[in-house]
Image (cartoon, rainbow over all chains, first blue to last red; front, side):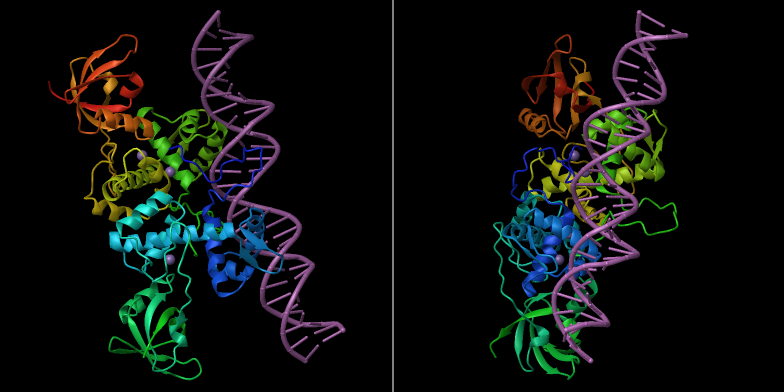
Length: 240
Length: 240
DNA sequence: TGAGCAAGTTAGTCACACCTAATTCAAATG
DNA sequence: CATTTGAATTAGGTGTGACTAACTTGCTCA
Ligand SMILES: [Mn+2]
Ligand SMILES: [Mn+2]
Ligand SMILES: [Mn+2]
Ligand SMILES: [Mn+2]
């Protein structure tokens, strides 16, 4: 027993500005969510954070104020939040953990890709940096997780290329699947059944009007898929 | 994101007696500690629980009352606590997790035995049953952890044989090391340097009077060790 | 320009898990 | 059998992270 708890009492009299140590699980999840939202929009809105974390917007207001006081966020009331450098560093550390864990579970323990997200969502807060590094080494330092998301390096660098969505292709265009949404096990199982995995080649044949279904080809096979699915598949355009 | 939190709000109006679901990390540690103490004494004293968990006795009083209300403990004020059947089940589940994790870290990831306890102390609360089973399978379903402690089975059975301490041997007796204390990394490193690992054969040569140092032999080599060390090494007597 | 409304914040509450200080209890001792 | 004492409990308090209900704010559109 005798483990350090995150909720230990403040006993330091000197309020020294600490270098982002020992964040709680919930805080790590906030930072991840904000990092994610910020990649699309320029600032993360309260409601969007709340939706991703499945909590009430009022709860987000409170937390966000505290994180700003700790120097992890820039926050102006009614204006949304942005990560500070410290906040971004912490977010990337957690994201690295999450993705290394997912990759390890699949490659070393035979997990299927549709269930690893949930497990990683908990383990990311409990694993030490050392464990994460050992896992990464054991599976050959992969550069992406099982869903194609890039794994940040130990020192917080990450491939930030923004890919286009399968739904944005023009008929006739061929592309490489680079990354798919990782949160919905059902979606992942369905994608697998279509062969729509990272590194697969996909061609958009037709698009029905008014956000209608797309006709795609994946390695010879033809499928019709909805836009909700096509929006969650990121691709890289292939030259003709 | 979107993970289930242990600190979710109570929204059920019906106070149904639930079947021990979803315990928090601290609660799991309490149950483990109480299980451990109960193996030696007949009931776990408040102060002893507090000491093991490194928290104030007052905190234990409060927690113990809540756990009793949840049906995990039998508790009578000023009389100490005992695990109920449900409490014991939960304790053994956590202990299984802890020990499987320790074994996996050593056997699959090359950890050294002196550091795995701390890592397991956190991971035991985050890993799913499925992950634990996969880990166990991956390393061949070991029956003990790296320190010789028996791993409970999936269905909560465990080898409860009580071993004697090295300090209790009589001069001339030969014994097999079965298990050593797992919490102190320094002790573990020292034991390793003496070769005093599970499955080693040890002979007690002499014992100095008044709790004095013991002279032991481990595979030909002769050492003098203190009683504090010898109390933390469990052995099984070998016939002459 | 000023309603109306959605987004966001504040106010007040709760459970959890810890703390210190003060008090109570039980068991041993003279 | 009263006193002492150490173990245990109670009282009161804190920080975290959630909630609902009530409010403010800022933006859009008539
Ligand atoms: Mn994921
Ligand atoms: Mn998480
Ligand atoms: Mn251990
Ligand atoms: Mn623990």
